[in-house]
Image (cartoon, rainbow, N blue to C red; front, side, top):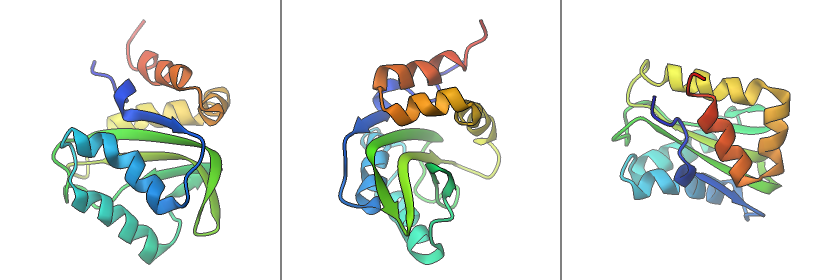
Length: 146
């Protein structure tokens, strides 16, 4: 099984000025690999501007996405953990997970695997702590059968 969230698509930083910068930085690894285009990043930002912080689905956690297919060259995900919470339309966020889907279906298995990690309180705390090596291990051991 391929890695759901490779190490080069996980970033941990101390702080950022605003949520827009966080969306851009979180998307950067996917953009560099041409998995998504600038259009997809802009679509995510526009979505938050238009509909508010609906992507904040748990404490400190935003699942960033836009309409499937638009600006997505290949299904992919990236993760940004910011140690200082960033205000996203009155919601504090530390974890920015970018989900780039090609269609309405194919990403669901990957999303389920990722959410299994986030739903585990201990693993969630590990992610919030912002240790990149530990975070990388969380996402790269769960995918393979032991």
